[in-house]
Amino acid sequence: MKIGVKQSVMAKLDVKQSVMAKLDVKQSVMAKIDVKQSVMAKIDVKQSVMEANNELAAKLRAHWAERRALTLNMISSPGSGKTALLEKTLLRLRDRLKIGILVGDVQTENDAKRLAVYGSPVKQIITSGTCHLEAHMIEKHLPFVEQGDLDVLIIENVGNLICPSSYDLGEDFKVVLLSTTEGEDKPLKYPGIFRRAQVAMITKIDLLPYTDFDLDLAERNIRSIHNETDILALSSRTGEGFDRWLDWLQQRVQEKRSLGAAEKGPEFS
Image (cartoon, rainbow, N blue to C red; front, side, top):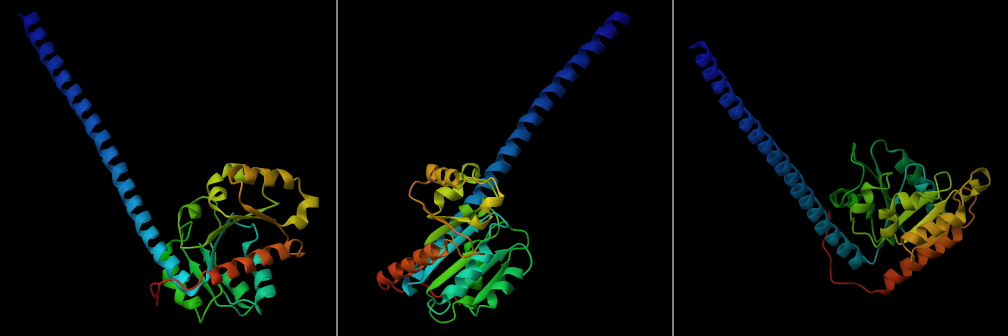
């Protein structure tokens, strides 16, 4: 009799364990569904953000086309020499071109203060943690630099080779900087921006004697990613190679002017 009761209890335990196992499987399946739905929701949000950014970027591009203002989006790692390049550019061209600059940084207005002394309209954009600039940030700060008719608007993006490469800001050209204190393999490690950039600048060439940087190899690596990229090697400190950059910039300005006024673009105020 006791054996029968025990067997009955064990049978009930087996049934309970079977039910619990099925519940565990169900919960596991539901958890996977929740994860998948969460991932899909994040993808939808990202697509929505990118679509909104691209739509606004197209409006910005039309806005600058109507004004025949050349627009550059300058991207590099931190410390590659973007601000030093802009300082020398403003110094050399401030009597020939009207240049406006938007400067992106996670914190501080240090770069904008450095550039403002040259008399050009400059506005700092502080992202407070965001690793790139977006089109709505450009739209918001545009009135601060569009004082009269600009020949060139240069956007100095946040120091980062990954995030900024994916966001269209309405620019005519993306310009990527690679310094001799980094590494000639940067184009291979971060191909996205080197594939999208129409200009690649190798900066700080005055430091070549003090580094192991292989200039020829760097150029070959860039060409392996984007064979038609304009490659400019220069030093903002000594001025070596700088005339090629200024010639390139002024030629692009003339080309933009020669396109003629497009249909009236949107106003931003």
